[in-house]
Amino acid sequence: MNGFEQRGSLVWLAVLILFVLHFVLHIGLSYGREAPDLLTLGLLIAVRETSLGRASALGLVTGLLEDAMSLLAFGTNSIAMTVLAIGGSITRNLFVGDSRLFFPAYIFAGKWTRDVVHWLAMGPEVRHPFMEQAVGQGIVGALYLAGIAVALSIILGRWGEG
Amino acid sequence: MSPYGNGPNSGEQIRDLTLTGFVLLLAFGTMHLPQSTQERLSTVLQSGLRPFISMQELVSEAGARRVRVEEIQAELDVLSAAMSRHQAVEDENRTLRRLLDLQEPVDYTYLPATVNRPGTPGSESTFLVDVGTREGVQAGAPVLSPTGLVGVIREARASNALGIDWTHPDFRSSAMLADGSIYGMVESRRGDFREDDRLVLNGIPYHEEVTLGQVVLTSGLGGVFPRGIAIGTVLAIAEEEGTWRKAYVLDPIAAPAAATHVLVFVGESGDSVNLGNSSRERW
Image 1: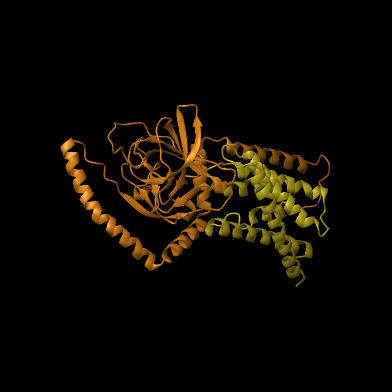
Image 2: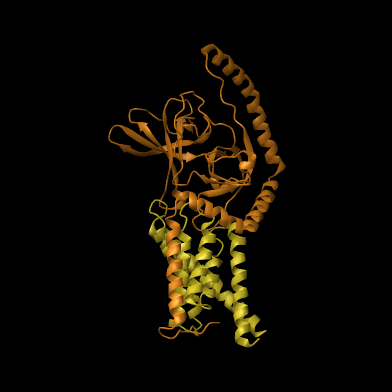
């Protein structure tokens, strides 16, 4: 296995761990916003490793899994995650992402986009005001996830060097 | 890793775009599926998340077992005192019913259950209980905490059931003041922030005087909730419409987020004031 393939395997393993950890935290341990949205982080990482079609399918599957526990607005997570996966996959062709700032900025923008799309997809009778849900909670959640992403990239970088 | 940038007009790119379009259509389609199909799909998807749901049940049970023995003893003492008075009241009630030639009240049965709350986006105001149709739980069954009404079961499955608490926008309950003098409808109102979510007692005739601090109970009308479950206390006037209707903000008695151990009704809730077979109220 060459270095390129090894990196790919490492990334997919990290994505799988993030997905499992997300459901452990949010369903197994019932954490809400206090736990980071690792499903979105994993998806944002995964979609840069695969083609547009596969990325969108992965987005739909992850969105449906989130929707499994949602009675308020079934389908909104599916839409948000699919749109996010498509958007993330398109950035592959626009940004190579060598800059140190790119990764946290990409995660921040991705998470915030996900929250805004989710807010838009929800019906007005279910969602909270835009300033609270999409701006306030959205930006805080995006910053939180970007911080987690930076920590993860440092850990993975050291592991890769080791 | 796939290469960056596909060649223009390549077959792979067309296949990719077609798949993406199809997936996007599916994603938007899920929102417009009939509710029954959404619930079936949700049940199938939840079976995939079963290990995490089981983990949550274990964690909740462990949390419930940590409750201090002293607290349970104190609750038992209060309950024993209440029960000693209850026997006398029940006897008096039976005698009065016989004198007035009223039917015997409906006997309720309930199941203890553990509440599990997912933390995924969109699952706010919903919860899972670890009892289902195998134990006799049906959709529409009221869910109570030791303090009062928490919510109602929305969807019952073999081994568990999905419910909505009173913060859900669809929550409704017919209600009355504790003395039975005024009847209305309790509904959930979204606040600017989640912490501002309120219960509102609506449909009160303008001329009726409601004193702040009065306890509001389920009225039993409509046949969903049994009569007499505590909902909240009257906090303030929420709105007035002309000179014919008033609504009051309630201070809810049960905090859904704090409820870990609940009771799920499995009997016929019925209408304990015997006003006939009114249609099921919408929740």
